[in-house]
Length: 151
Image (cartoon, rainbow, N blue to C red; front, side, top):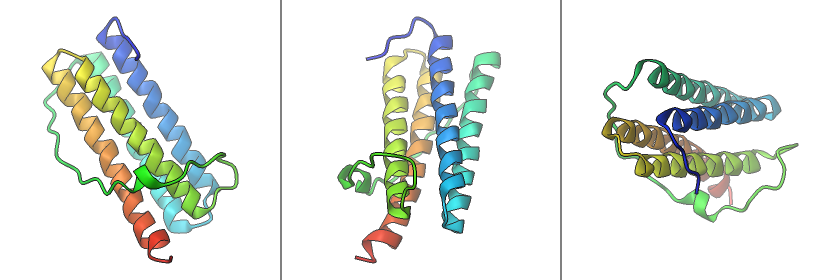
């Protein structure tokens, strides 16, 4: 388990994770041959950048009020195989990787929320966890519509 000695370290770690997500979705968008998913991956890269900017703002000016909401979980990502490489992914594999990445991001922010005592910071990480959960749901719905229904 990661340990942090300050809120700044927590925020820096979270911002680094968001940048990795931006890079990840940007790569998937570049590699995608499906135009609609290329747009989805590009959109998610932008959303992850917005998350990073929110965290940067919190680090620079402090916390504002956050509101988390419940997001459904289809649990499809729990039952899909791991994909070994990001090079030349099929559409199905790209969706699997994206679902698993969002699931990991959800866990990260949930764990960070549990690990801080500041209630506003806890709310912010809970909100970010729900945002990542929404992303996973979007990929699960796409997987359900485009992969599971074809089989």
